[in-house]
Structure formats: C-alpha cells, structure tokens
Length: 264
Ligand SMILES: NC(=O)c1ccc[n+]([C@@H]2O[C@H](COP(=O)([O-])OP(=O)(O)OC[C@H]3O[C@@H](n4cnc5c(N)ncnc54)[C@H](O)[C@@H]3O)[C@@H](O)[C@H]2O)c1
Image 1 (cartoon, rainbow, N blue to C red):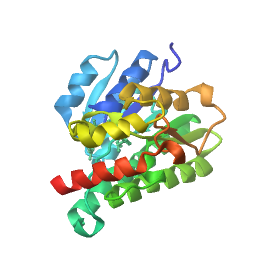
Image 2 (cartoon, rainbow, N blue to C red; image 1 turned 90 degrees about the vertical axis):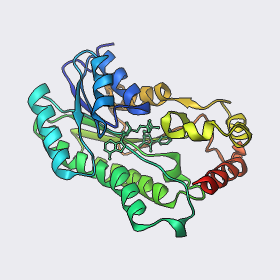
Image 3 (cartoon, rainbow, N blue to C red; image 1 turned 30 degrees about the horizontal axis):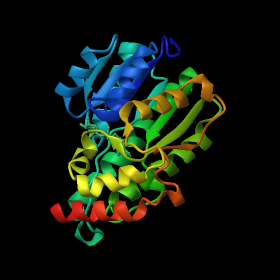
C-alpha cells in the first residue's frame, strides 16, 4: 500500500468531504499531503490525523496565495508530483437570478482555482519529469441540470482544462478528471434532508445509494497511481450509474433542484 511513498501531494479543499477522504487515502499510501483549504482550522484537524500531513490556509481564488502555498509545500516535502484540485462550491438557482458576485465566485473557485494551482505546480512537475493531476469536476459538467448554470459551466471548463493539460504536459505529466454524481458530503447535506424529493433520486440510481467520499477518493488515487500509467486527458464518472440515460433520474433531479432553488 506504499504506492505514493516519497511523493508530495497537494489536495485542495482537503478539509472536508471528498478532499479529506482523498488526503487520508494518499497518506495511507505513503504520500506527504498538503491539506489545502480556505478553512485552516478544519484543514489542521484533518492533517493532525494523517501521518506526515501539513495544513495550509489558502483560498484558491487568490493566485498569490496559491503560488505561496505551492512554494511552501515544495520547500517542506521536496516534491509536488501529485495534485488533486478538489476545492469547489455549488449553488442552485435559475440562471437569470445569478448576480455578478455569485457568478464570479462559482467560476473563480471551481475553474480559476483549478487553473491557478495547475499553473503553479506544473513547473515543479516538469522539473522532476513526473506528475499526476486529478481535477474534481462533476457529472454536471457533462450533463448540466436545471438551476446550476454557473456551476455546470465551471465544471465543463475543468474538463476542458484537463484535456488541454493532458495534451500539453505529456509524456511526464498525466492530467485526468473525476466527475462525481451524488456524493454524501457536507455539500449535499441539504438535499439529503429533503426525503420526499431526495429518496426518488437515490432509488433510481442503478447502484441504489449515494456515493461516499471514499468511493471518489479511491478513483482519484487510482488515476494518480502507476496503475493508470497509460491514462491521460480522461474524465472518469463516479456516479453509481445515475447519469446513464436510462437511469430515469432526470425528473426526480429536476424536482429536487427546483425545490431547493425555491428555498434559496
Ligand atoms: N458532493 C457531491 O455530490 C459532488 C458531486 C460532484 C462534484 N463534487 C465536487 O467535489 C468537490 C468536493 O466537494 P465535497 O462534496 O467534498 O464538498 P465539501 O463542501 O465537503 O468540501 C469542499 C471543501 O472545499 C473548500 N473550499 C471551498 N472554497 C474554497 C476556496 N475558495 N479555496 C480553498 N478551499 C475551498 C471548503 O472549505 C471545503 O473544505 C467539489 O469540487 C465539488 O464541486 C461534489
């Protein structure tokens, strides 16, 4: 299980949900993990539980902070050959009610933050002639639902950025993406608390459950590992089959998202 021994890993949004599970999975595999988050206390709480991990406070929208964090992680670990761009925020409301501030927040955290981190880490990967990047997009980036235009657009951008990175930085650096479906984390807790609209979705997922943060972390670890040595530029959907055209989740999802937008 020491597949990431002697590797330095940066996991953004590492203080919660999928990021925290990924940080734990990487640490178990021997990586030294930079748990990067805008919430330093929460990042420190996670880092304390993981051997060799260090918490860094960084808002990925702040390019100076991103550059500084990557520099510090390099100085501390002497390696930055694994990067997981996971920090993200969502919102649900009709497109015409998204104001400039919200639009920029969703684009800046989800898309620009991913770009800034890649830009800061890639020179180190190129110098070391090795690296694996996994960006966390979303099923919404492939199949947008109603009421999440800015989020879906940002995540579609993350998928495009992933393909561009794969084209530009082979053969030494691989860049891939995960596209989670419905995962039980603090991000989706509000949905889970609406049983009448949530349960029909869960029941129509072919695997009949929400995903766990660990389900996604395992796929991220696979894509970063040598087991995926010939995989780059790909988006791996981790959704229990929710996004399959015949799954029949569309109507239930529309109802859930409409209900949630009403409450916003
Ligand atoms: N949970 C799902 O169902 C789901 C589905 C598809 C995609 N995703 C994606 O997975 C990723 C992780 O989501 P999660 O469900 O674990 O959510 P989460 O809310 O549990 O964790 C997100 C983390 O990102 C951090 N973060 C937010 N903005 C930040 C910023 N500007 N700078 C640094 N850190 C910031 C938060 O503090 C938090 O620790 C996100 O990119 C999300 O879009 C989640």
